[in-house]
Image (tube, rainbow, N blue to C red):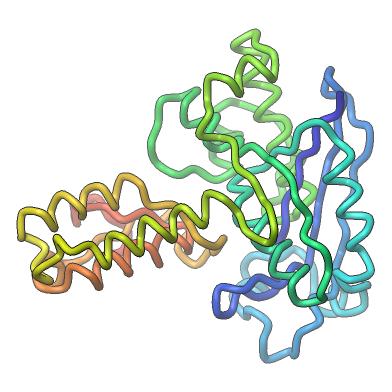
Length: 289
């Protein structure tokens, strides 16, 4: 059996639509010996003004010219599709965002949807360590004392480190892949017909929360609103993969929260989308609005 670990980096996420500039992957066998690995450097095929300037300066490990002088996603499509479809299991860290990015690119170039099931190693780790907060690949690697690639935000390095994290958990538990995944059903996700199951479910939960007939007031202290508020905090998942608030704890003044219930839900979603975590205690925050 072969296991695939992949990760994407983005040149832009404007309007919630990702433009891929790196597709890094590692394929291993059942003993976690490397069968194949590569980092496909991709021309995102966008105007220079569309590039995410923050990503260029703070996140991506290559210069813009290297990406722009590389082939487009259209060129790599068949290779990426074959890599994903010809393995037994697909893994990644917060892979729903990367699966959505693949969908965005397939739609842009009128390409067939790449349909596959996959597993989020971050969700496995959260069960493994009994934690609820979101953690980056680097933070999990450090917590498990895994020695891997030091560079961050290189798609191949992140895919490789994610592989090492899963390998470490399996060795500590002395479990097979099947045993571990059976214990963490929430780690499984699917991409079908240009849609990612978990993201579609999150959109529906958000739609229901914002359109719920119980929201008769925009007052966050209204009893039913408080229940929805805490449920939303507990269940919110990123709808895109951003880094502007990576690993930051964000709190918002209760003076605003009290009379802007619907808006606070939107802000919590945006904070989560950018890699941050909304917290209630201002004293524990890195950023206070």
